[in-house]
Length: 171
Image 1: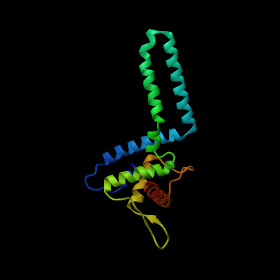
Image 2 (image 1 turned 120 degrees about the vertical axis):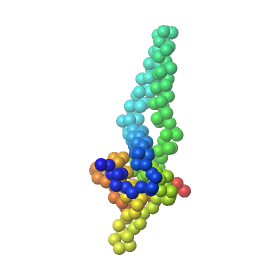
Image 3 (image 1 turned 90 degrees about the vertical axis):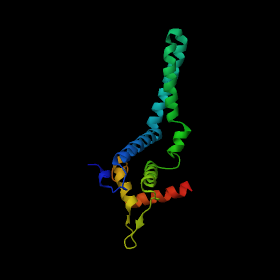
Image 4 (image 1 turned 135 degrees about the vertical axis):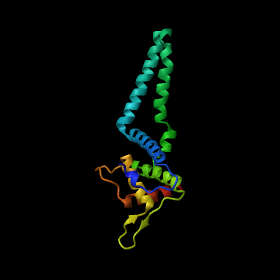
């Protein structure tokens, strides 16, 4: 059983649509992790360099190897595209943490499914943060396997703070 199975969804929303969206979000966050990782950046740079060197060697070997050059060019372009400014901007790598990027994606899906702005409530008695968006975000974070560095879940208060930051950054 998945964490999203317990989330109340609006009438007419197919859970399979939500699952497909989660898979897209998972892919974006995986790309973000790879782009932010020094090891990932080194591996991509090394792969580009190796492919470019092979490109040059094929040029020197002669005509019979030219048929491989378009495939190498496609590989080089795909690797470079993963590091493109457009991808970096889409994922807000320079302004947001991985957690904040995840909350941004979750908030976008909340708006799509529920046609309202994501929000939260804070108890005046004990400052406990709760609300439908907070519960939705908690479940989706579990599905996306976005945890703190120590492996624990993000608290509702952290989700609230990320949402507040996103509102400031997006203005």
